[in-house]
Length: 213
Ligand SMILES: [Zn+2]
Image (cartoon, rainbow, N blue to C red; front, side, top):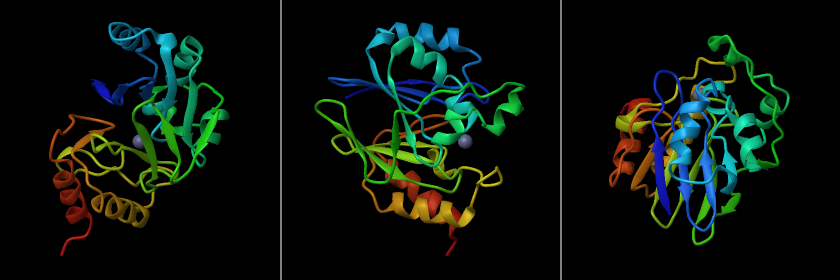
């Protein structure tokens, strides 16, 4: 599986392109700078080849671009069942931070813990990690031990904020403890730089930060 990161600037989320036999996109950014994202994506792939658009959670900076990308690609949109109504009904409150509105888009695959998406030679395992938001997921690819962690955990032990609507610090602690029990080499968070080779050490730091000895 090949991973391309399109680093989000400002408040934009990172977007990841996962290429194997099939192609998946993880997160879409706000969609307010879609021209830039499309130009970057088209250097790597034909947009029509995207099979899945997987949203790590129901915040506008991650899913605002989903409608446009879905229409251009015909991809199936996948996100946790708790976040799906927010996108389907266009109710995402944090769009207001950007003076925008969440465009409505159908979510074809409403995910839950333990679901697996097939990319060809590799598979993506869905881990429900609420805390930053009710519908937050992480996506694990066991072959390369890669974790796409959305806004649950970031490089260097940073964690997602819990003071937004639906945030829950106890749930976040539980979620990060769950991730800390996994074998993660490569950590691809929803914002900022990614980590190759020592992902679990960065997650362990997040766990210590949330639960000091
Ligand atoms: Zn978020």
